[in-house]
Amino acid sequence: ETGVTQTPRHLVMGMTNKKSLKCEQHLGHNAMYWYKQSAKKPLELMFVYSLEERVENNSVPSRFSPECPNSSHLFLHLHTLQPEDSALYLCASSQGRNVGNEQYFGPGTRLTVT
Amino acid sequence: AQSVSQHNHHVILSEAASLELGCNYSYGGTVNLFWYVQYPGQHLQLLLKYFSGDPLVKGIKGFEAEFIKSKFSFNLRKPSVQWSDTAEYFCAVNALWNSGGSNYKLTFGKGTLLTVNP
Picture 1 (cartoon, one colour):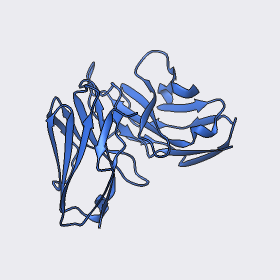
Picture 2: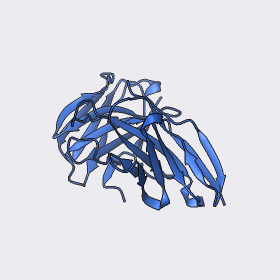
Picture 3: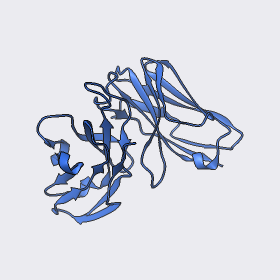
Picture 4: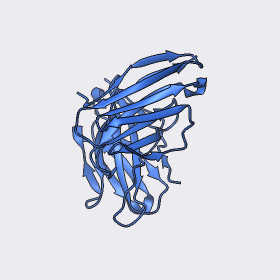
């Protein structure tokens, strides 16, 4: 049973749409992450938030906009996406700033951009 | 930039066979090392991790991995696989940039799909 939930689990959107992905962690962690998992490619770290402050932006295009209103919630706002943005988007959380702590992953949102 | 290589894309074994999945990384400094597993339809979960100390680490479900610093490797092993081990396995590395320091970035390999036939 995962302590990290993500909604929606599946999303199909057109290139002109605006949508948001939601992640919630129930583990009392204070660091949260967004990853992109594309077929045949390694997981790519997109953003890291620690204590609600963005501490890493891994050269992600501005059409992806994260938001962390509190330590339990993380959003990824999407607008004017491209078909190549279709992927599985994973959220993770960990305790503390040190990534040596285990990261707990959610089930992901499967995004298809048409 | 650090990178992680998993040389086997898809491994197919019969039950009771021994398993070894390769993982090599490119960073020459201090590292934390991880193996994650993703069972069909489930989320990524930690299998085992190495931070320091004994280079042979044991994880859940009978898995172990050995850190060989001179080879920049962290191979995953299991002496006898079961059908329930069918999953995708990901090696990940966190490079520590300065003494006692850390960063947030886990660099993942592309993953190895393991299929165990009954």
